Image (cartoon, rainbow, N blue to C red; front, top):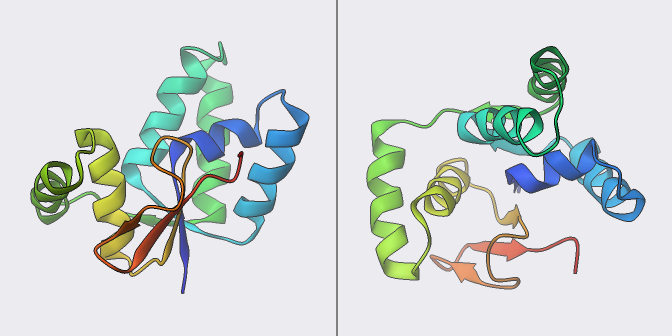
Length: 131
């Protein structure tokens, strides 16, 4: 089954922390799935906290979209995220990532933003690759 990546994995792949960069790149080399939300959040983080130029951030996003399958965030994704957020106590943004991962039949979600080892809906396991 495919894996899904959250924004932090992508950001670490182009970051300066060598250990996290190596782990993140290894995950991305396995061609996981990311949502359109993850692509857009990556651009926002890179141009904000990471001080990339827009052109540099766009280059990263373009390379990412060539590497991974991009899942859309639809009205159904948003509705499911609302339910998941309430059920599991997730922020709406995290719930959107979870909903997209479930919609793409992933069994693993790589993220440092959620509880490591948490199983969602009995079929999606959150894995923090940086612990």
